[in-house]
Amino acid sequence: MQRYSAYSDIQVRGSILQTFSSGLGSSWRLINRFMLAEDLGTMGPHGLIEFDPMGWYPLPGHLRVLDRIRKDFGDVAVRQLAATIPRFVASLSSSRDIRSLFRDVDKAFHLSHGKNGEPMYCEQTGRMTEGIGHYGVETPADQKQILCEGTAPYPCVFDEGLLLSLAQIHEPTATLAHLTPEICRALGSPGCTYSVTWS
Ligand SMILES: [Zn+2]
Image (tube, rainbow, N blue to C red; front, side, top):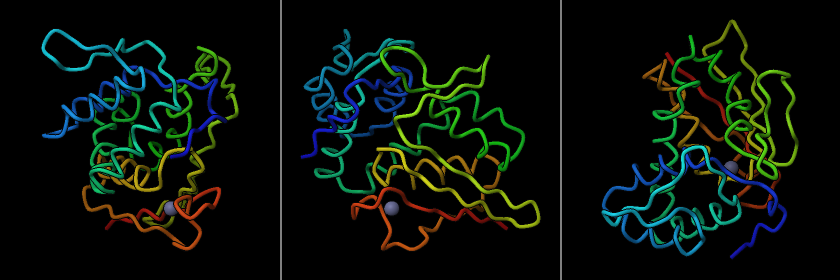
């Protein structure tokens, strides 16, 4: 299993991990155990893992938990987990339309990750800290299509679930296709390109 040592100084917000424990369904008990084994969260009084929503938790452990979920429960479980995130990220669900939402994804992504305990995006200055890749977005105004290139360390299937779920906030008919599937992070490529379309 990959160790993700390149991300040893990167953290993820507790609020993001909290959404995971809400989206786990019937396998939550086992996945809680994976998370605790990676020092993510603490055991709460009802046997459910708890996170400090504003706290920072190590990204490598989070990525290893996702790998474990993928191995034990399949791609569909990782997609489902990622799809629960938009419901809990207020800045994204309050966006005006699908294009403005996608233009904000990379900022929200950097805001929910930290380097040495500092958010990787500063809303006041607009400064972004490098180190976790990007969600690069093209939003042609005359087409019902968005192209998104994902170079984050998350699994490709995670981004597929996340981006489709984000698209469907404003466009319930949205579908997502992985362009040039042979160029994919799951096959060792640095990024994946997705096309989101709607009617
Ligand atoms: Zn891919």
